[in-house]
Length: 329
Image (spheres, helix red, strand yellow):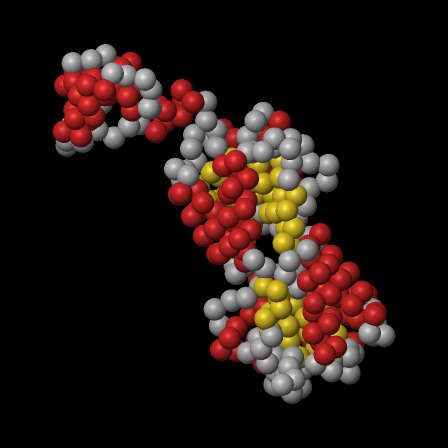
């Protein structure tokens, strides 16, 4: 097995001290002829600096930690791409961890990221991680919460979120324009984003003189119970002419449940969901899209730039109209 070249080997080959090699590799002030000898030796010996050692001396690694709570949601793919591109452009790696929406795992993963002395932390989890993220931020590690805002954010603790009330109002406006009058709603998990979307939807429907009663909103925690939820909505209201799915991770299950019942979309029932996905154009599904790629970029930029004053960035949703609600024209 070939022995890995060390900084001592480079120093010996260049005829200088280890400290001098370290200064050259880290951009310190060294005479040009000395720096040239060091770089020549490093290149000849194919020397690779030890990032772990550098992080020990710096007190922090160059890695950005990212906690994803559920990779089944289409929202996260572009979010991760945005984070990774900004990190790469700024000399950082990204450490992704999927928590599977398990609160105990979420807290443990944040602790692991803290122990690894990450450059910064991006979390998409629920409030279970807030206390530890606040502690990390207080110790100087920039942290960004994605998909929700943070109450009374501490220094170095930022958030990147969608205007969820605006998303709900967009849904209401579109359904009304398509002639839909009786709406059923599927939400997933008890997340503030879901409830704000319902609030916006209810506001928009109310302005059009249409109700959204509490019994028309069903919480579904997993895809296995989606069929029962869709059945329940249809049984409660025989005049139901639209179903809205306010969670991208439930889209396929809700769409499949409607098709399995023999309901034609949009002739028998309208369907609208959150988050665009690869098959949406082929299926004609109308969606409310989040700018997840841009949100990922901004989250990573907050880590890189590390403003001490907490920033709470809010992004606007976009309605992508196709055919699933019986769009006119």
